[in-house]
Image (tube, rainbow, N blue to C red; front, side):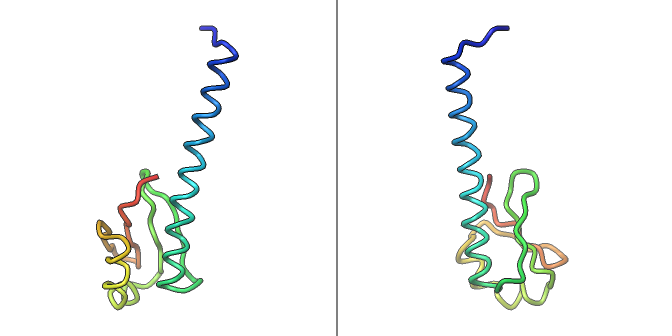
Amino acid sequence: MKISKRRLRQIIREERSRILQEQDAADTVLQQAMEIFGSDVLVDEEAGEVIVDTGDDQVVEDTYNQWIAVWPEGQMEEGGLIYTGVMM
C-alpha cells in the first residue's frame, strides 16, 4: 500500500496531537495529585486510564473528600491506588 506525502504528513500531525493530549492529561493529574498528596506520589497509566499511587491506603482514605472532588469518577484500590477515571 502506498501512502502519499500529504497523507503521511496528516498521519504524523494526528499522532503528534494525540501524544500531546495524553501528556497533558497525565501532567494535569500529576499536578492535582501533588497538590493533594504532596511530592511523594506517582502517576502512571493502566489500560488507558491515569492512576495515582500514594503507596498508603490510609492516606487515600483520609483525603477521600479532596480527591473525589477532583476526580469524581475515581475509585480507590488496595495499596494506595486511585483509578482517576481520566483516560489518556
